[in-house]
Length: 292
Image (cartoon, rainbow, N blue to C red; front, side, top):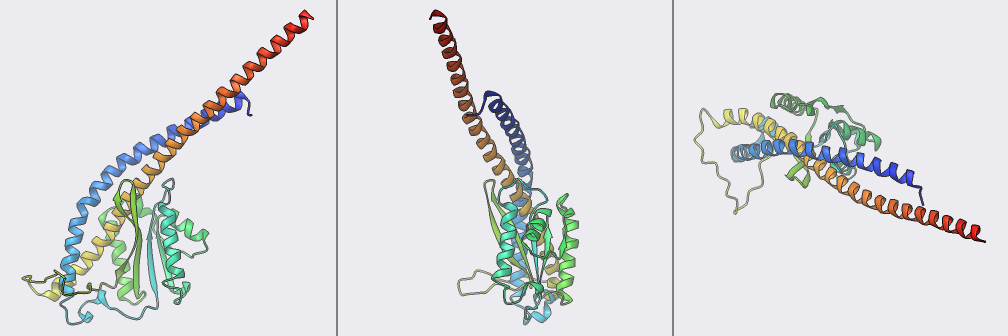
């Protein structure tokens, strides 16, 4: 059994850790509230914009009128992995890295890793992928410091230009989609090419719009706008998920620290009781020896 001084030092250390995790939990909760409000307000707009886009593109005669919908043979792929620059958020970053590796080993195994480029958004994603032997083509860590629509739209335009120039035949996003403070859904979705959803007789999609000046002109302006909004929404989803994951992780860490403190205090009390008992026995033994 450890001596009393060692147990006191451990209790003090764990109490310090508990204070830190509790403070980080409160900070994450405050940031989550703002991030959650932002993504909740963003979703209806993004969903409606995408619905209008799908309604219009589904009525085009061919994808030739849509440079962002060219469905060609996949020879080169870009995976945009959105994570975070910081840790202490459970499996938030590790799940993104695992999903990317799974895609490389399954979906794009026949293509080969040399034909799949990784754009890592977030230092942790880059570090985890590199540690697993995955080459990261490009990183954009600074975007997460202060996310703005202008910054994200410039990134989206660069990706769109790379697709239309033929540098990539397919672009996919991997990120955590915010569900609530305690849970996030890891998603991987196709970003480019933009293809209309499959229609069936139960589909309620309709395209009875009055279009001015023309459908082609509107689509030409609408598709880039929708792609920029889609990428921006992915960033907002990821940020809200990060704060939720960190708040949950710090809440669990605080609870674990409290349980550990209780255990150490019990161990301390037992050690102290044993020490007192030993001292009493020594005094009694000494008294008996004097009597003899």
